[in-house]
Image (tube, rainbow, N blue to C red; front, side, top):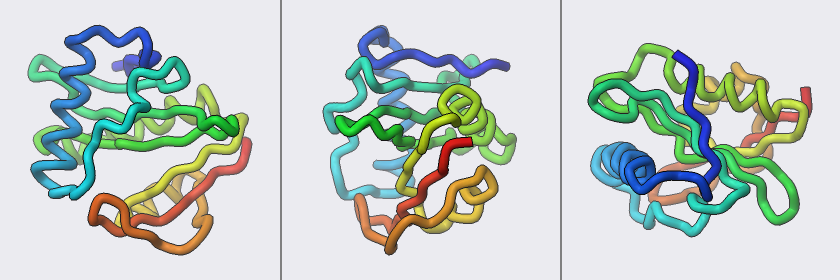
Length: 144
């Protein structure tokens, strides 16, 4: 199964709904994040959404975007509870690295996922911080 990739400014209303549905289930309900998820980035042309899906909707999702300074960032990595343990997020991350791995990529990893991101070539890039009530680690991956 090949991940779907869609620029933010080309998302359909149904796709936006499905993206926010998986993020709401994982971040708001399961993880009880204490900050709003909608942040003004999702619909930008510089934001790309990648996902895998089945008959019940999105199974795994992430977004990647470039900052005003031209740095690529990865965020909002989420896998539906019943689809975990199948390597779906790894497939999405590999897809990002295949497409944009020739440039620096940054992310804020939830602290417990530090080693997982490290296995893809990311390394710690600063001190831990709290975001949305969850401890995070700044990480970066240098160009391949």
